[in-house]
Length: 195
Image 1 (cartoon, helix red, strand yellow):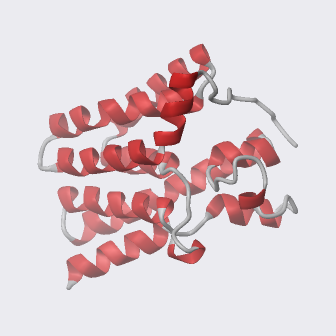
Image 2 (image 1 turned 90 degrees about the vertical axis):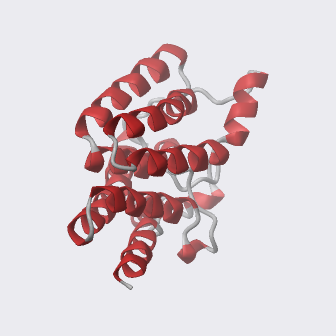
């Protein structure tokens, strides 16, 4: 029962649409009806600027960090990773928004940070290098997803399987981005400090 309760709480935490809440509070309207229609930090930046996007990213990370902390405290590190995965699932398929959510990247990074700060630093540097070099946030994230299972299995303790599940989920959520990258039609990052 404790396992089930922790997973449910982690999923519900992940389901809280931080970007949508922030943009509504800032008077930017319904995030789902502007920009790409996504509730993630990239679309928040399009409508609210970089500062709001950073805040949305941090809050979405925090959801997964809290979920991992709950799992770690209740059971242990491997279960904590699965709680992090549940939070990412919640971000992608939030019950509050009829299961239409974001693509999971910010929550995925929160999960990584809570499990392994070193892996978080490596993945963060990789994302920055790729995103800034090529101008595509999605490309940097996709490379992280491809590397994540290897880091997880290197950490050990069964964490690799949770990282693999997270990577596959996020890759699937980015399937349209992958097609656009291959077709040369993916949108480039537009840095706006404020709207």
